[in-house]
Image 1: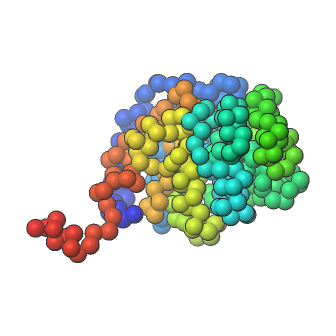
Image 2: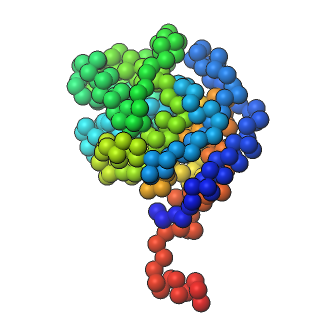
Image 3: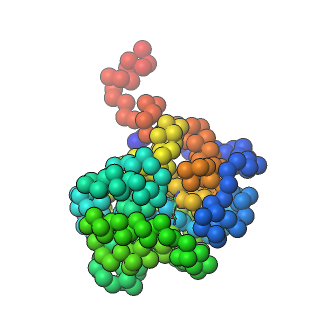
Length: 329
Ligand code: DON
């Protein structure tokens, strides 16, 4: 994708979106995980990370919030990195469920057909795939080291959030055991569930998510550390998953509005990838009824519109000499 944007245009778009939505009070914090209900609802931050590593940040971009379902992106990538994209497709799948992120019905409906690593069932299955099998601590190390390589910085579990999730994750426990029933989990169900719960409880900032998004946008090279984290061939695979199911049953609405692959979490974070161009992230705790941050969605949609970032736009791309002469004629 070829886009002619300067840094000032990007900064202005972020600042305008921030100013436009900062007083929006729509939506409600997640409360089915008690810790999340207590996070200050007014927090709001937007960050962009460019291919040269420059970060443009507005608002509360240093506040560490629960990564939640955004963690499904790095773990799906790690599973692809360890096994290859085809194996992940075969063992988990790439189809949207069209149902809520924690749907049991989706597992029952698709018991002969896997779904996607970006809903709870597929994410627990992705955690189960991470090598080495059976070794909880080593698997956890692999997951966190991979996320740290993507963000280029240290991350840590928010202990209180982990406790809060562990004490209330009965639905996810049912999912893990149902996967076991259908032979679609590849390690011990309780171990896999605990890894999933722990990864959801990691604290991240909007800046860190923007760097993660930029690493994906740059084909696996972290723009800050310059380290190669994963093969460039995986960027179109993970962005395809994000585009098809990143906002669960509201994914079509999101894609229609922005044209961008992105992933939300019930902590209020959204990570959006503009392949070859930049990584974007936004954070604001109040959610819509599908579990996606209201303000973060609105702000990123305005930015995508102002900067013509949508992947389906025809306003950018390679213009051949023949086309140029037609346009200029
Ligand atoms: O498993 C759960 O329900 C949470 N730990 C994560 C769900 C989530 O973030 C859904 N995304 N919008």
